[in-house]
Structures are given as C-alpha cells and as structure tokens.
Length: 125
Image (cartoon, rainbow, N blue to C red; front, side):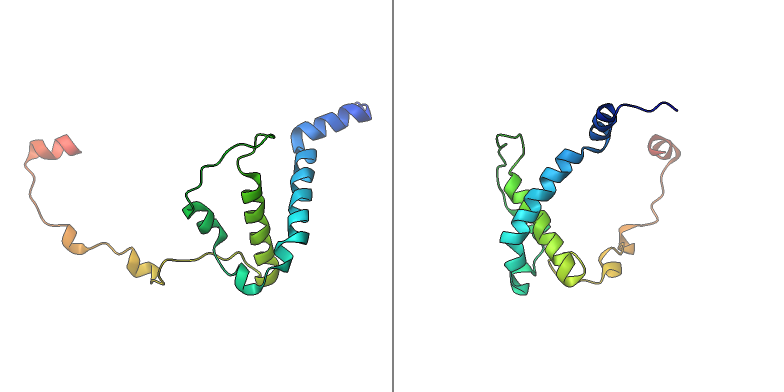
C-alpha cells in the first residue's frame, strides 16, 4: 500500500468526513450551551422544542453563509442536548394523552358484505 503525503491525506479526510464543518457547528453549539441553555431552568426546558419550531410559522431566510435561520436550529439542537443531559431523554409532547392502540383501531362498521358483479371486481383488482 502506498503512503500518501500528509496534506493529500488530510484533504481526503476533509472531503469524506467534513471535520471542519462539524467543528464549526460544534463550536457554535458549545457557545450557545455555555451562554444560554445551561442556565435555563428545568421548567424552561420542559417542552417539545421540535414541535414548537414546526408549529411556528416562520419564513426562513438564508444568512450570509447560506444557512436557513442558523440561530433557530442551533438553539433547537442545544435545548434538546440539554434536555438529554438533564433528563436522560429528549422531551416530546402530545396534544392529548391517548391510548395508542385504541387510537388506531379500524371501525369494523366501515366494512360491509357488498357483492360486486364480476366486471366491477376486475376493474378494481
């Protein structure tokens, strides 16, 4: 096996693993965690951040780096990471507490014993 020059190898690693991009994102996240989310109370963290973001009807604009509302997404990642650190899980909410099995039951009255003539049966088969 041929040894590649170190600079060539690092270029390949950067192309494959995008290390610089990840380090930049992680640095931004760490700044936000240190200055904001770690100081949030448990009550401030007890909400479904993903649902909040999806339900807010915001128009997302690109910033100078080409990111859509970078701060909003960094805040979401940091809040969810802090939830995971404090509570051992990311918090997801529900509109109503429902029994999941009963929620998806099919109404048996929906089906009936209709007779189809042969032509109609072939058309839908």
